[in-house]
Image (tube, rainbow, N blue to C red; front, top):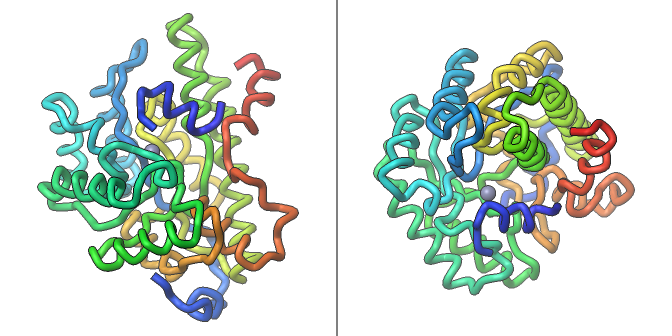
Length: 311
Ligand SMILES: [Zn+2]
């Protein structure tokens, strides 16, 4: 399954800082740092874990680690009486709330003006929250297929006061989550421990890859933003994931703190535009093609491994 098929299963339709500013920062950060960012806010219930209970579990895990995350919300998932109060809890607890468009369209497939309106429609819904910040995360991390499409949107966002809510560590938690939910639907009492192990290993593998890549490309570690989703997997295992990072010597930082890293002001001149900002900067150099796959992350990479483990 790829990201687009994943979206269909969920019922979804389908600044330039000079390179010097990015590359000249040479101090090595000995201990990597990572912030948690979560996308979508899809709150389907799962056997043994309702959407509301999962919301509480994720908030509690963040609270345990005194961490403020960023929630990139697609308005269509929360624009109702049931879910909007659940999102309000994030605002009340001081987490950053940001824009993931209202309809979760894939930008290259819709007209610029429609996509622009969809961003503003989401802004109108979300600006009631005091922790709303003008960051846009493109659905599927898809920032445009052509230079014209990419630059038109970059200009609009700049004008409107938005920054790109880039991720540095891209991953496929959504895919592992889909497999876990599939298992629980058939076997509500299934042992979830092997999914936990697979998930932690997967995120660690991706985190190590992108941190290594940033050191190769920029000569330094960056303040990472990890892409996760508001899903059952994180309702069950986010606390374990945060503990894992700590046990490996990584520091946990708030999302707004992470976005102070100058890497997030980069605007790599690559098309298709998108993916992890570290990936795109690597691509832009033309020197790392052997270690850059496209798409950078996809369920298809994880499927054979999960099949082999019977997950
Ligand atoms: Zn999304």
